[in-house]
Structure formats: C-alpha cells, structure tokens
Amino acid sequence: MSLPGLRPLLLCLSGLLAVAAMAGPPESPVADSRDLMVTPPPFTEGIFPCTTCHDPKAMPPNPKKRDLEGMHADIELHHGDRWCTDCHSLMNRDKLHLVNGDLIDFTKSYLLCGQCHGDKLRDWKVGVHGKRTGNWNGAKQYWLCVGCHNPHSPHFKPLKPMPPPLPPEQIKLRK
Image 1 (cartoon, rainbow, N blue to C red):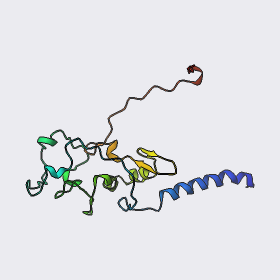
Image 2: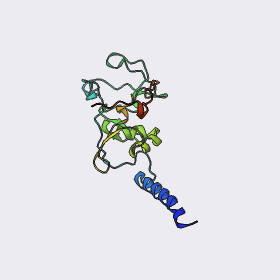
Image 3: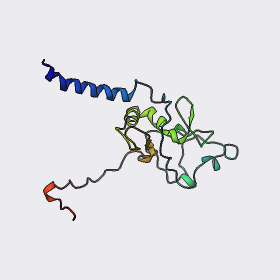
Image 4: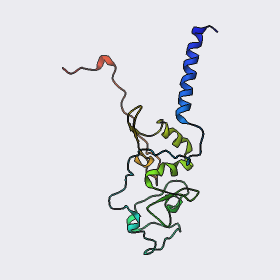
C-alpha cells in the first residue's frame, strides 16, 4: 500500500485511539472516583431531606412491598421488579445505596443507575448518552440520569417526530 493510501487508515486509527483514551480503561460501573460536576437532582419541592418524614426513630422503616399511600401515592413503579429500598437506603432515606451497601448522595445517582445500565453509564461519561453543558476542553456539567428519566418509570413515552428541515432554497432570510 502506498504512503498516500495509508493516510486515511492512520487517521481513522488515531481517531479510534483518541476515543479509547477518553473512555479510559475498562472498569466496573461503580469504580468512578472522579468528582463530576452534575446538575442537582430534580426533587419535588418540600420532599428533601427525606428524613424529615422518614426518621427511623419516629417511623420504623418498612421494607415490605405494598401500595404506597400519602405523599408517595402518585409514584407508579415501572422499573423491573423493584421496590423502593432496592435503591433508597432503608435506614437513611437521604442516601441511596449501591449493591455492595455503600451509601451515596443523590448527586452520585449515576453510580446507582450504572450498576444495571453499565453501557449507558459508559456512554454518559464520554458524552454519547445524556446531556452535558460546558466547554469542549474545559469544565463540563453533566445532567444526572434523573434529569431526563423518571427513576421510578424510566422509559420515555413515544415521541412525535418534528417535521424535516426546509431545503436551503426554501429558507427566507430576514432583512
């Protein structure tokens, strides 16, 4: 193969290596020690901190699956065969818990989601899935999974597609 013929191949390989370097080495979804700038969780006003109502001393925790009442009666859980305490800490409702029992803040909920959705977490970290704002080569703010997905029912409802863009010859410029 001639040197000019190698150039596109080398460019392609260097691009793949750059993407692989950004992704970092393979790791478990929870082995992320980086402090990412994330948007605040979208709490409904007046429900956080959870221990305001869920004080384990005043209200003994009940891990049994049941119909929710009162403040949480509007929650419809459609996220596999899950229950509240699969994600929320039983004894400290102001925290989430990982499978290994580690407690995490709601601002690190991507680690919890990533335990089951590792491919999405990987894609989110490198900017392929989800939303982030900020600078290309500088500080970025990542949107948490719950910024787009309801954690209790994460599937999107079907979206109606927007009309296609107009061809350039049909666009009228403003004067």
